[in-house]
Length: 102
Image (cartoon, rainbow, N blue to C red; front, side, top):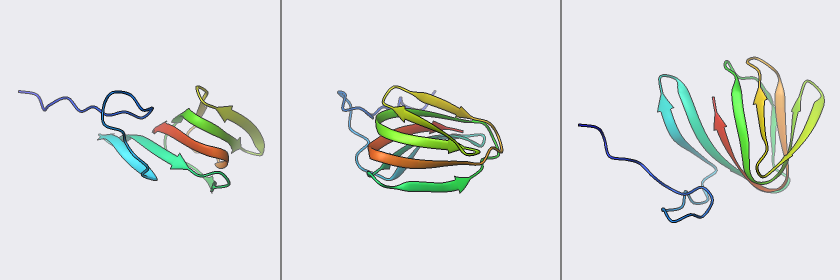
């Protein structure tokens, strides 16, 4: 028998909302994680690296993601893929919600 289906809403759908957590790990399987994060306007994530490729999709808001001094502005519906080991940082211009898979 399989575990029960897990459901929730990241965008205000019919299921229970994920809420205002700063970070919520939605999936953690074999070292891979799906993470829901929220940011307030003006928040930053300092330059860091990841040991795997990172897929980021923006659910709401406006952010700038900088990789090796190249800034890319992203808004709701956009995504970026950050290569393994690439130094990157994030700056939030308006309240934002993102989904990260790494």
